[in-house]
Image (tube, rainbow, N blue to C red; front, side, top):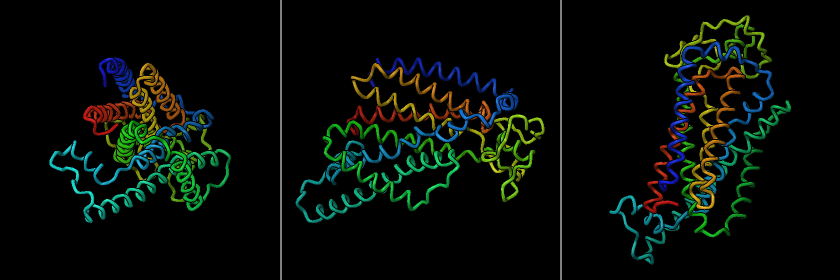
Length: 344
């Protein structure tokens, strides 16, 4: 990225880390008190962001993998890309050889089927989560998995048919952004999968257990119970642990994966707006605004997670630090690959 584009992100990064670290320090000493004071699980604002706060993360997969599908290459084109990374591997000179034709057909078949299935699964992540949360808010039964698969297969096929006539050269620019989005999504997924290691009990789980809201296994049921802020007066908070200590799983709480906040880290996917804007000359002036909008969105998501009693201030601030740091790594990789002409 050019120097003029680096300046805004350097300034923003400095401010971002100062704010996030300050919140981590405040939360370290006042986590429980802050979340208990904010606790209002009946807040419609918090409920909406509980259901849709991860929207930008869900929205990565379908569009990104669809773009990769549309940009799929033949064998020699693929070897040419690999050659830029590993010079010893070169394209095949005799493309009329039977072996080349066989492997070329095989590669096209595998990439066509494979990326179509991945694109369908990606769109399913978005469509299913949106429909499921709408039905949940309306107190309606969720659709079955076969119905979702049928809907998303048809939807993916229609999107591909509508986009297949777009000029390949225009798609190549988006392909680099799509690959960056997929890499960022994988990083965020790894963060999500590591959450149970912390054994940090959520406030709403302690409120639910202390007030008799249990599931069929006899564990706390904080998310789907009619909890109120007044119930904190009758709650045993002895299971609370600071973010820097592994919690003691007492075997009575259903969710002991509070740190870091998954909603907040996934909301960091909004930073892809900056990468998209900075990739096009006509949009570069909007890149700083993309950073600010993303920061505000992440802040709102994090705040609502505390209102819901799902997370503490350090969960939110820690997730923001992790998510943004991973985004900077993705930016660095994207810039290196585009500078070398490997992608984009």
